[in-house]
Image (tube, rainbow, N blue to C red; front, side, top):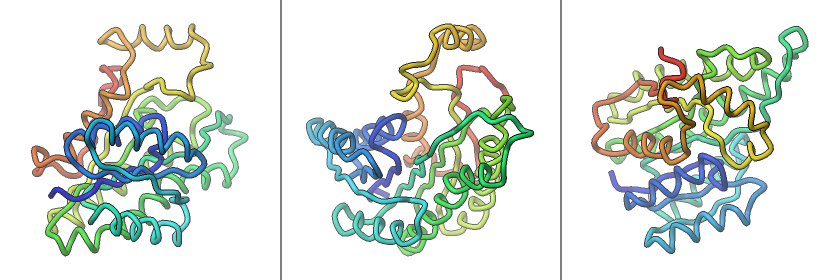
Length: 246
């Protein structure tokens, strides 16, 4: 399978690194963005300078019509989507459990259940007709850490894992693998103002003695998207230096 990769929320953060890494493997890459056109174009420019092929695509991946139009646009410009990485996310506020509302839960489920479902439904018919594909979800080790104030986020990540395993069983007969890469805390641009003392406290809890990097997440995504992972499906690979072991 050498078709295009669609990475949502790829204008910055982990998504940008994943997009660059998949392009380095020779895949055309669709860099999806919503508010950050300049950042998305910068990722595309990085890929192009490195000899790869990419294009930026504006779409709200929580909206059904936008997702349908996005996949059609990607396939018209870059070719069929053989790799899907639903990476887009939204705000992740810290809210005490006694204050969490149903809307707080829906906000997280929108990104980790609704959006992946819409994207999967848009790309799977083509994958089936071509004899296979790869879906790589981006999870989180917070599902195990049960961090206070993150109940809505953690619950949605648990639902995302359940989706992945069910899809793996349903889509396996068509040679479509479905897996989750679950990072620990990987500092990216939005963590620039984080208190250094918090970063150091986290680092001391990591058996490997350091923070992970976005490139290390991107490498695992690229592996699962490759032919080397052709017999791996329904799995969750935690990438956190041993901070949580499940």
